[in-house]
Amino acid sequence: MKLDEGIRKHGFRKWYERELMHSHAHLLLLLACAIGLMTSFAVFSNAAPLMQRALDAAAIALFAAVGFWSLKRYFFLLLHAEHVANQAVCSACKTYGRFSLVAGRATQDESLLVRCRTCQHEWAIVD
Image (cartoon, rainbow, N blue to C red; front, side):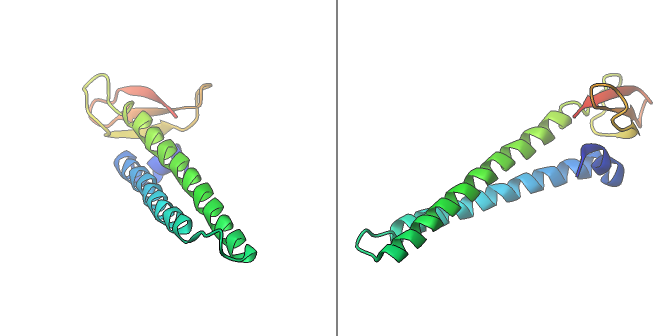
């Protein structure tokens, strides 16, 4: 879900919470892949028939690829959420996360124009 759609639909705090939950779900997938990778290495044997070794090698490659993808996705989602959260403080009244979306993707640099619910100050959040 895009940032402006997520904030419009759920509000900033719920969007932020969902982003963190999604990122940590990818971390759990990475843990499962690490366990699968260790198990695949444990059952791999040079004495096994060629078909069994090929199947074990395919399992190792699959767990490694999915684990690498989930690690990349974990860091991307986590860092994106933190990047946006660092900009969610009103510079006028220092209120965190209490803003409404004025315009999504309205400026040239693809930022969101938001307005503080407390003091009505407007600023841009760069996605």
